[in-house]
Image (cartoon, rainbow over all chains, first blue to last red; front, side, top):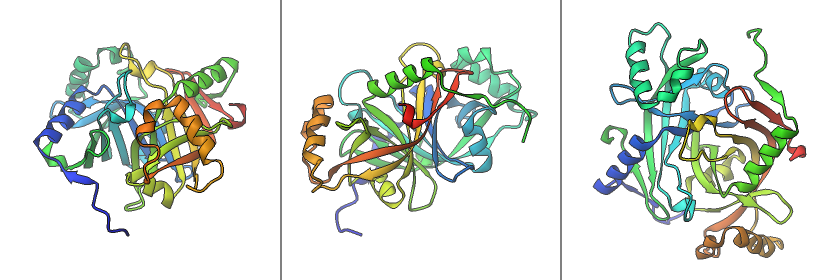
Length: 161
Length: 161
């Protein structure tokens, strides 16, 4: 270990507001998983949104590699916050969320409400939401890191969001 | 196991051309690592580009969480291919690359050439490329998957790229 200071600070009000804006504006996310075939990191793009109760969610196909990975090991990490076309993309804020994936069973009594809520925010998903291989997955955040650009890293307690 | 067909096909010429366009157009990537603190997936945004010899690379700070993760375990996954502001982001093509990270030592005789090549493609990096905590990392691709939209998944041999 070194003696250099921790570059990550506890979130202040401004950081929390930025984190909430990144979350609420996200329609997709990058998802990191552990590949059950080799134990190595895997990565995918997923749809991103929220359930009626505010829990982060996705809608994924059981044909996808990340579906199998999350079934085998629900520990994952999400990144939201897309850089625009201008400027250094590393100065654009992004949120990195360690989470656990919780599959919503197809016969879950909440599924109809989840489906309606999801389609309000993701109307294009009506093309496939009722396909047999698609299902909802909730993400329970474990820890959150905000990178607001160089030298602006903040840890956020999931309970604060 | 089920008997359903493998949804991933071997890349054809069109898929290879799409993969090459995604790679050459990428200035940043999402990086999945294994967090050495807990063994769980971690995710970050990194700069992305190529060395003079065409190897995928990044320039990262040793203060970043992913630097420590890659030092502890060089197995990682990269995703490139940013959705535009319109349409369903999941229909936008992206490339998912499993790779091994190889740190370029600060006294590597190739570093000066790498630096000049990098700055040509990433001119804004001149603000920090010579900071003591920044260093180059090469990625040796192990496997590549192209998702060109729903139902268009292709595996690509890294030797084909």
